[in-house]
Amino acid sequence: MTVHTVFPEDYRNQLAAKAGRLRGQFARFAAPPLEVFCSEPQYYRQRAEFKIWQQQGRAHYAMYRPGEYKKPFIIDDFKVGARRINALMPPLLAAVNGSDTLRRRLFQVEFLTTLSGEALISLIYHKPLDQPWIQRARELSRHLGVELIGRSRRQKIVLQRDFVIEKLRVNERDYHYQQVEGCFTQPNAGVCEKMLAWACDASRTLGGDLLELYCGNGNFTLPLAAQFRRVLATEISKTSVKSARYNLDRNRIGNVAIARMSSEELAQALDNVRSFRRLEAIDLDDYRFSTVLVDPPRAGLDAHTTEMVRRFDNILYISCNPQTLERDLESISASHRIARFALFDQFPYTEHIECGLYLQRID
Image 1: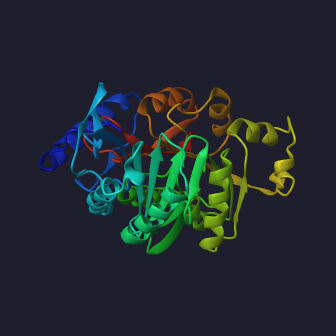
Image 2 (image 1 turned 180 degrees about the vertical axis):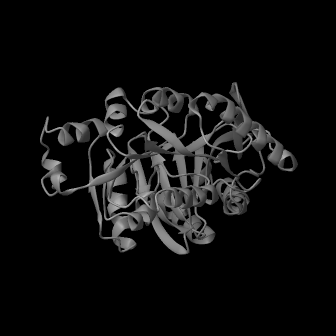
């Protein structure tokens, strides 16, 4: 993991510069005024990973500077990390250095925390993990009050569970999310709440049925389900699909169906090109889709999916890469106009930009 220079007193100026670059990049698409959603200037990341630098028989947290990956530098705190992470870092390191069993061959530590106060720590080793390690790890888990996982090559030891439960508040309702170790979750939970509220507001009058591609663990699915008659959500990852179904049950949401398939496969099913056993319990002809939501990886949409989403009257596009978003809009803007345009500052002090667009079909 790399670290970036943090100047909380200059955060607003940095965010304004980021917004200015985004406005300039998309000016030719006649976008409406940009809605800017800020982050907390410190203690905003719920996930963090650190290299462990072993030096003179002691372990230290270490990170890399951008562009410098040969030798890390030692750190004592991580001010962009959540307060829970910062509170756990010293006692965890003290326990590791107090036990040769825990310290030896340890090379990485990962933290996953939540706004609700839960925490999961993964200790990753260049050695097999044996029964003495398990005993010391159990003691450490109880001492810190966290979930603890040990990893080494072809080995994963889960002492109790490999997930935490996050609680996000959207439109005066609390939503509970299972977040599994190693699976993608939005790292900036405070900004994530703003993203979800924005998506709900943008779609509040649309009605009909929603098709969601790349749904992950149901991050957008849960709050958006209240906006539509029914939702069909797709995701390719088995683990994410399992979490999404768990989250739907946990939040008592009954108008959502989850299909484990890619966007290209769903397009083939909608076009009656192929049939899939994974859709046997889902009658696609019974849906009346008014809106499609896409939240693709950094590579953006493939050409086939881009053409498919253009069939919908309304498109909600969540993007983590303005470059591929700009490319996809070259095609989508021929049939749709940008009705709302938002910047969500998930990663302050970096060049990274998260965007949200609501596009309407041009009459």
